[in-house]
Image (tube, rainbow, N blue to C red):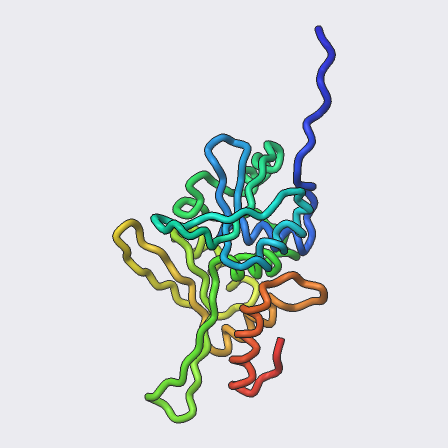
Length: 225
């Protein structure tokens, strides 16, 4: 029998941490697993998010540009890398091919769940607000998470409720291709969720989304996160 070759090394060091969980959240929302069992990618319109992703996984890759759909202009940032070991790890914690429609529960360490959730929020989440004309001085504030997989938003809803006991609503938007779902938290439930997601020092996050939340908190007259 010939000598065995060296054990393959992965591009990503698999070790749970706040940054690692955050990047897993980004992959769960803005990422893609290719069918070859080796390659993964992340596409985003924010250069800051692309840089944060590389930092979390300590990747030695360049940030590329790509277009979306039939558009010719390459205005989205793209990170693509190959790592068989990390690919198998992602599958072991719940990632799937055709992820956007099939993803469900992700196996995240309990103490890192809200770091993972902050990554999901920076990926496919948003906050929005408006003055409700039906009520005097009524300012509405929402945080939501979007996905093409009802299993994923239902799982998120369950995990958040177990930890915070806050109410939520799942809405559905039908499109020509496939429906997508939105998990929504309103006003003070949204405030409590935001405080939990951003709790702690030296967290990575997308600045524009945190600034938008803080602007809303200022209007309500609450302490910023």
